[in-house]
Amino acid sequence: MLTRTRKIWDVIDHRATDEALVTNRRKLLAGMGMGTIGLSFIGRAHAQEAGSLIAPELYPGERNPAFTLDRPLTEEKLATTYNNFYEFGGSKDIVDAAQALTIKPWTLTIDGMVEQTVEMDVGDIVRRLPIEERLYRHRCVEAWSMDVPWSGFPLKVLLDLARPQGSAKYVRFETFLNPDEAPAQQQSWYPWPYIEGLSIAEAGNDLAFIATGMYGKPLLKQNGAPIRLVTPWKYGFKSIKSIRKITLTDQRPVSYWEELGPSEYGFWANVNPEVPHPRWSQAYERPLGDFGSVPTRLFNGYAEQVASLYSGMEGEQLFM
Ligand code: MTE
Image (cartoon, rainbow, N blue to C red; front, top):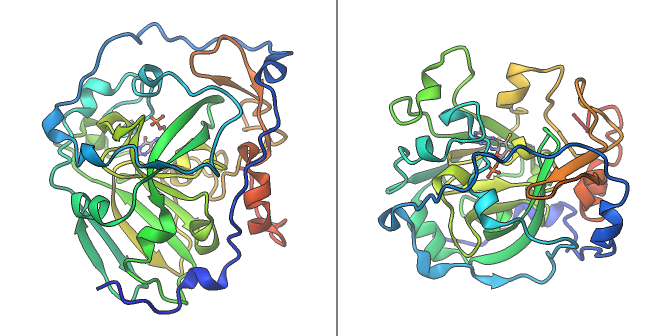
């Protein structure tokens, strides 16, 4: 089934990454002045039923040394209890509500402009593709950040299962739609299901990652189990959770947040400290668990790996 033809990635610039590790964390912390994150609700233990985890024996996978960090990992308890998952409510405290999501079985479809439509159970996908671990920064548009050990595989490796056609220009991602399990999806004034998108060149970049695990275990439901996108050079809302369908297309997808607030959230959403959100500055960020702020970096520190994706695109709103 995995017949090898010339892949679309072969014609796209996706240089191997070699992350620059230069900044001392203490220096980053110098000059902070912003407030702290209210974490009063954190501290409850949230054990997910072991039976609902998919192939825990595969995690964390081999650590890929090309993707490391220059600051400490976020404490696991914080990263797994301070969440944005609007299908389960508008607060950060959605852990309990998210446990209603059925993730086993979970079929992922890859369709559209592909040589072969794929419909596979996520359990079969993780057993088939080699799992690796990468340490990535994550910068939310709300100006908090975290540093996470993700497990999974490059997005392009997943897409290659369906062999994208050369005419495909974008990749559209769609989350589940199940108002019975995700009560906020009963609110018809929101444009459910959650949609995100990347250009085909972005999808082929080595940084674009599909996570099926974090902190050495399969993903927990609140973090987007069983399968999510991670694009660390973009604001966190691009990293769509609990993906059901991936469609290769020649039409630029309209993402969930773009549909809701086009003057505040665009398609590209690349991190840039010099381009403020219309309602707040993006110059600093508050790492979860830290009682201060650090400067935000262009492309969240990944400019070396991704800036070339956008050359000649100065007319586009690349940073919102
Ligand atoms: N994906 C879906 N389906 N629904 C969401 O509400 N929130 C996004 C992103 N992916 C979201 C989503 C936002 S705004 C952020 S910052 C990250 O998920 C948060 O991921 P985390 O909860 O694992 O930190």
